[in-house]
Length: 159
Image 1 (cartoon, rainbow, N blue to C red):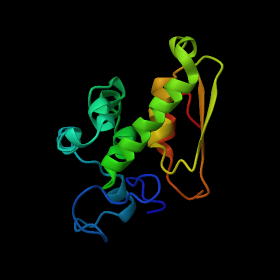
Image 2: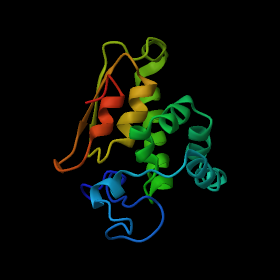
Image 3: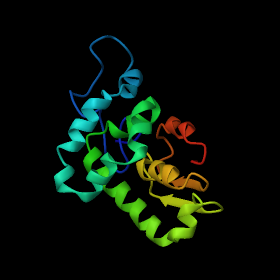
Image 4: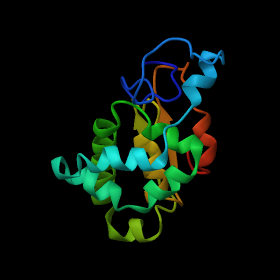
């Protein structure tokens, strides 16, 4: 839901496992929300759906996945329960942008482009666009101003 740093755009919540509520170890709920699941488990869970979606399959083979798994701030975007839906939608959006931008703009890394991701939620789509178009500016817009978007600092062309 809104404000959960491990949630996803539009309704992802939680870290993909376990119950809700205060953590049993006495740490704050905020630190519990910031925990991530291991990279290998994220990949395993996505691979289980690769045959269901060409977008999941292509994401598993794409360079941004490895970069996101190595950076805990970005890995949190892949810890949401709705990760399969979110990755499918984000990858689909990237394919649409790739098609609209054309080969010349894509080969320049999107130089001079400004891309707006409207209703961006936590920003998985915008994050993938920031990898796809590293020389562009990707701007996220969402009505929920209370979300933890600290992961944006991991991508220099994302705001």
